[in-house]
Image 1 (cartoon, rainbow, N blue to C red):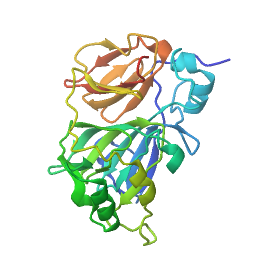
Image 2 (cartoon, rainbow, N blue to C red):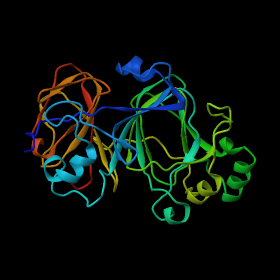
Image 3 (spheres, rainbow, N blue to C red):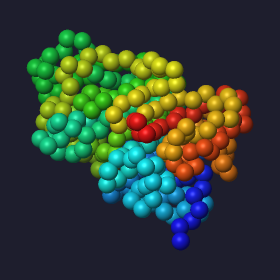
Image 4 (cartoon, helix red, strand yellow):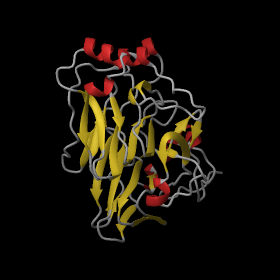
Length: 317
């Protein structure tokens, strides 16, 4: 017998140690991080062979996201879901105390040649320090020949477009876009369910054994969109931040009670500020939760002024 369907589901985060990480997830969001480790990523909602979200509490406690996707897709996610073998999204928190590598994710048309999985993602900057920036796209006029020459000559950062970032900004990273998150940014990342990254430059950083971190220059050069010049931060159209074939991300200002969804489909929520309640769950900044399809009418209730949420769904569902 299956347990009754609760309103929101919360999951145990999976902390990832990274050379560029820090401790801000504890300082800002009260996360209980492993002692003495630099945590760069917290995988909040994930269904991968090497990483599995597990329901934290309630009647479904201990179920994995993969089990829910395989065995209870209509109830949890809705009837109009893709026929994918795994839940198609991955939601993270990232703490960049140092620059991440200059990197690219391949698009679907190139994965057969270079390997890996396609990945498009978006970033919401939950806390950015003064002077923070990102690297994204090429400076206008850079040619493929210049790109290849300076990659091999360690001059790549000179060719990459730099964008000042402040708290509350959002940015879209389609597959093929050369990019790096700059130091001093804590952000939410919503992406396709992929973990393929090709690094071109890593700021001459060594791993824990003192060896240079590996690069994937050949694969990256084949994957970069060389016509992607000087992109800008997202200019929101109403509540919608991103609507692409892989996900829809909205920003809600929760001033009054509001249902999680107008239709019987799941929605993921991330609290940005303030505080609220959803069913029997209380949420605060940095909290992620998934409202199941059969609980789509769950009322989201603000309990503090200035409550804001990201809402993540699949397109057309």
